[in-house]
Image 1 (spheres, one colour):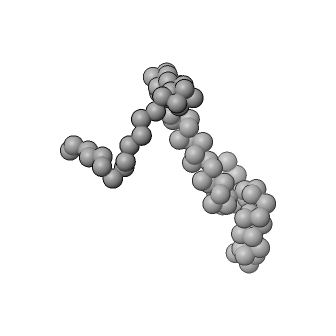
Image 2 (image 1 turned 120 degrees about the vertical axis):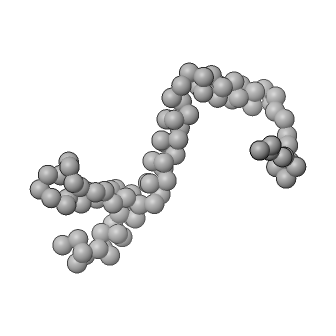
Length: 87
């Protein structure tokens, strides 16, 4: 059924932003795949990055410090073209 109506399913996923679970066997939890829109996939990747950044106390503290500096306009401007990284 999926193969026959793939175009319709792709359109539905893209427009509704809702995933479609595609079972490959009778055991849905073990062998299914999920079809999601690129926008939803990108959003999930961003959430995983945020989760990683907030995963340690050191990272959370550093991010909080950076946000406080930004709010207090305590920032340093730089030109990306002039930065050199030592190897």
